[in-house]
Length: 228
Image: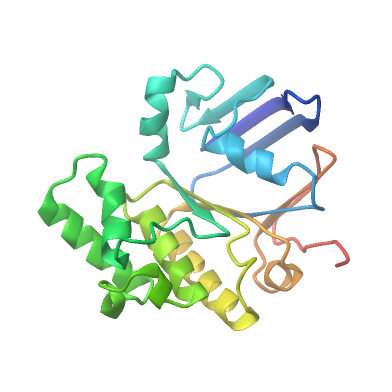
């Protein structure tokens, strides 16, 4: 599903974010990516959905080599990957329904299919009764659930979540995590960068720890492992 081999990433300012990472993530896994700030977690995440390109090394996503993938093919790659951000990135003037539908409209799906899929994912995230609300009328947790619904409406094989509970209170964070577990249970590979010790230690999944651009720990049913 996701294979990295000897991956390096050095930015134009000379900062080396990743220093030879090799990792193999199988279809259907739930993986936490942890580590101190500046360790390389965000770069690791961005490389998977081709927001960044590696300086050296091999990255295969569903057998596609991201280092050599032509720019015109990147949008097709991203149809297979849903991304959930810490700050939601919702379109403020569109309704909940429209925010989610937009992800299908841009790839030319039919209105009938769009309606069916949008209502299905709204039911999954528990927001079917708020389809006509705009983002400002929702709580932070509800906005994050809209972001999740948008990320999965195209039925991607991979969902990446970059600090998805970072702006949320503990109770809401647990609700979001239950939603992620439901998505993972349907066979979707889920990769989540997080600083939440409590979540990682309570919901034991695979843990990949990155420090100074290197994988220093890779454990199944692992723990967070850092003092906060």
